[in-house]
Amino acid sequence: MPIPDSADLDRAADILRGRSLAILTGAGVSTDSGIPDYRGPGAPVRKPMTGPEFRASAERRRRYWAGAFLGGRLMRAAKPNPTHRLLAAWERSGRALGIATQNVDGLHRQAGTRKLVELHGGLDRVVCLSCEQGFARQAITDQIARENPWLAQLGPEDADRLNPDGDAEVPELDGFTVPVCTVCGGPLKPDVVFFGETVPSARFARARSIVHRADALLVLGSSLTVNTGIRLLDQARRDGSPIITINRGTTGGASRATLVLEGSVAPALHALDERLAH
Image (cartoon, rainbow, N blue to C red; front, side, top):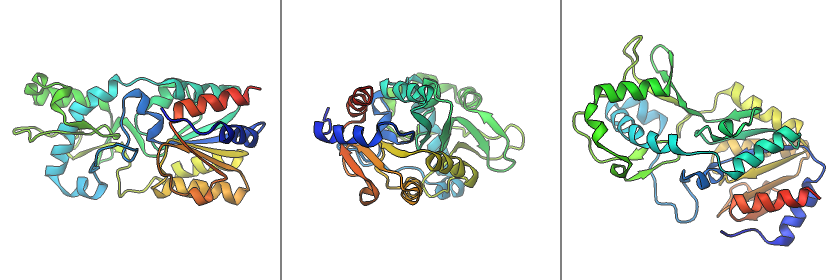
């Protein structure tokens, strides 16, 4: 796996040494757990579900939940990788004041991070679009299995590819019964921010507070193509805090960063950790 130049890592360590850090993570942090990203080098072209089409189209909801049933098996099998665990250790030691993540896989929580803002929500929760009743994702998975017993015959190999939001590309599944709210019968949606939707203001404010209180911002595994990440970079710039990004491939907002490192997150972060330890 490519790793940033040693001199650049030395410079990053010099910038971050002795500073409290805010961490912003994207899909590149979870690729080592088997969860793909949307835009990394070599990633296939993906068409993510958007919020407006999910709400407007019963057929799109049907396709989503069929794919999510199969994709959910793969997501549940994913475990925190060394990057998640190292960042949790940084939080425990006080080096990291908190983590804001664009990921919905819950792996930061599983790794033990407590000061965490899941900007785009979490796949382990489901909400009714009509009455706003919340459900555990497992309860909805169980409902899908009961109402579609033939799905037990399908395995992960029946999904063409897994998306970072837990959805999977699936062939047409005739006869699939879409889960509904057991309180009012309304349509259900995973409690995540789809493309075309806005991060709740209170949630974003918590992330912005972490950035504002920290002495530096470290961005890991994010292409920074969505507005939420850019707004956090702008907060750090207003505060006069240095910004360092580590990502494979092109990173948006590079002109805002103090230092841009290109390479795989895991080896780069562990190399940086070794330098900060001295």
